[in-house]
Amino acid sequence: MDMKHLPENIADDRGALARRDAQTPALRTQLARVPADQLRLLDKINIDKLEVFANHGVFPEENALGQKFVVSVTFYTDTRRAGETDDLSASIHYGEAAHAIDEFMRAHTFKLIEAAAEGVASMLLERYPSAYGVRVKLEKPWAPVGLPLQSVSVEIERTR
Image (cartoon, rainbow, N blue to C red; front, side, top):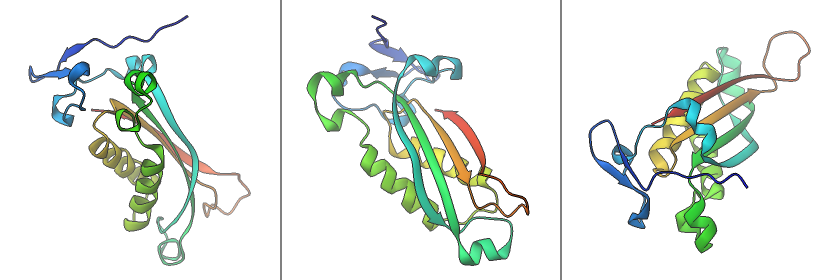
């Protein structure tokens, strides 16, 4: 069985320690930076294909009328304590996160989906200190390109 192990104590780039056994999440500035290639070793919490109606786009009509966006998010985190204790406070509440994404997408207006994805990633890292990183995929199924297509999308991965 492939077990995922995170170190008990991690020194960040400022020398402070983030401790797994502290019973409370470390502050964002205390969490160690995780190289992107090592994110795959962490546990994952996924929100897949959340539909949001929002007003993003280059054309004024897109901002005035709005359109559907589809957001998928992966949180890279350590779920061991949540799994061992069955305690939601030891995890990332995906229901709250989904509502936070919806609220963020509706409250802001971006010309580019790249900027919207950056905003979502930044908001999630700020709001969920136990996430070492996030992957955000933002799809625009009604993109006005003048040709038949299923969707256009941007996918980014951001770490602390």
